[in-house]
Image (cartoon, rainbow, N blue to C red; front, top):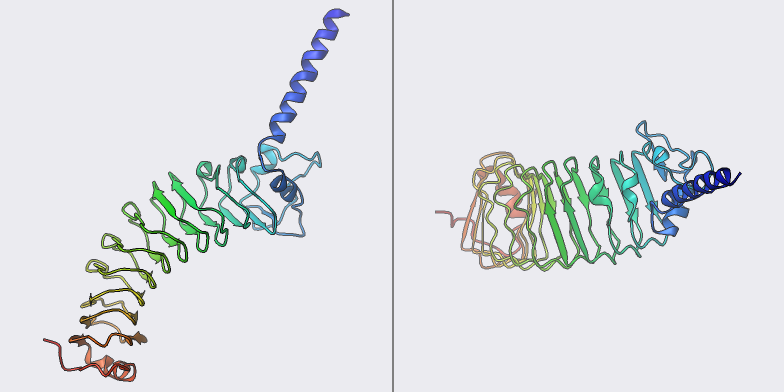
Length: 302
């Protein structure tokens, strides 16, 4: 009988310990409560067939690894979450959308090796973010998040980075060779090294403190917005894909938009009254004349 009691005691202890471990997978209890409310009628948890699912399928109040591995997308919003620690229980997660102004960190995200898309924008308490060694990540949106530091490395498939309207003074993009879309407007950037991003098609870097912008290797560029900086020259010669240029309100003296490619569909050059050399395609003269609010001399190209 004594032996039976010992065996029973060990069994109960192990069972309780297992339950405790499961309960502690996700640390933030507000987040646990929110995720437990996921069902077929909302879009909190979505599987790989794009169907909303009930996350706590067995109704035991615990998010098990078995239940979590069915989730391909999480939509977290309108809840007071401080941390994502434990989120890596969702090992098959591909898409993470989170809007929680109380959020302090993204702990656990670094272990989501199947993650392809993350939108953590408008989480104004984040401060610092680090995305490292996420081999399948293609899109990061962390705009309007109060960021002062952003670390990016080990992201071989990253194509879109949206980190505008933060407080970034520096931005290291040296390892993001697959980038096609970059939005880093409205920060405090004084330098932006992007000339190695040969696949870049879309660039927004307006409203910074940039004095130089070397784009000479970015021949795939289709659209650029670099207004409200301190740039003194821009050269888009032979940028055959470029159709949209907004370089208003800089200190430009030399401007070359002789792309020798497609006609421009949009052009903003106002606020650059000191341009003394202006080169362009003859077929763009109409749009240039229409937008030449500073009465720039159009016969200065040498």
